[in-house]
Image 1 (cartoon, rainbow, N blue to C red):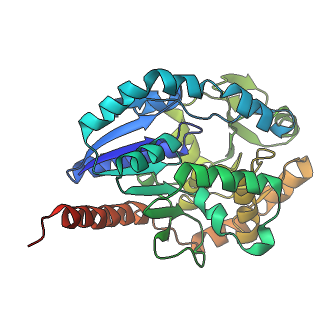
Image 2: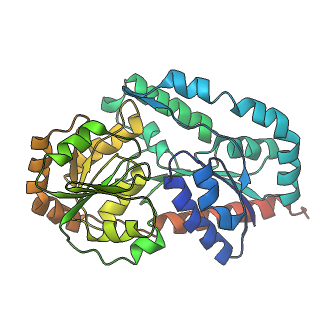
Length: 351
């Protein structure tokens, strides 16, 4: 099959996932054309020669995610598509896709419907559309649900990455364990002395708390490099996997992919969710309710000391948690076979 694969360039979770998925699809004999946006996403996916498009980047200020700034600073998206629509249409038509996968990327969703091709949505955000009624109501949740519906509307199937199975959703909604990158699956985790800190946005208040503690921290944030007391700042690179493998715990913003990696490697996680971004809040609450970690938006030294003192308890719970790192891939491949068989049956002449 020829598969068009739209990858969100906001954050890196979908991007690292795409590296695994595209590699597997090509090994299975499929041709894959990738659409994505943002310098980091395009750079990491360079081996797959992605077509660069434009997409939404979330904007934050001191109070958290800013809806006004996000809308105003992303208005450039529309002129881009006005200028490049014909070129993109010719390029995609020449590829002749049989099916489309969207990893929370709305342009590929639009293309699938415009071409009348089956669409498979694959993300964790669709879990927000299936929450219990008790979790409904906040504006941040409603906004996240609206964005999810826009990005993935009308899919033939929804592959929803989740840390726990949920009821309902219909026969076309498939809850699966998240994929784990091959290089992380190959790690043999050890319990070292340092705590890994991974921040997608600078957090001076948290750094101040870390400096006051009798612990060693390795911090990844905005590619800052250097030593500052008990903190080692490092840029993304070869050292990251080693630091992840050997850490005794993780402190970080509550993106879905790093939490999945922490569970797979049995690393207790203290979450510091980005304010006003409901997906991060939802993931943070999972850490607490599952007993696999803890969280706070305003972290104190006492909070972290209590968390670190309880690491044996978290490790015991992590040892009992079951996550199938191959389930997402296998589910996607099965659905593509189903979609392909349906397309062939539809196109075959009747007798």
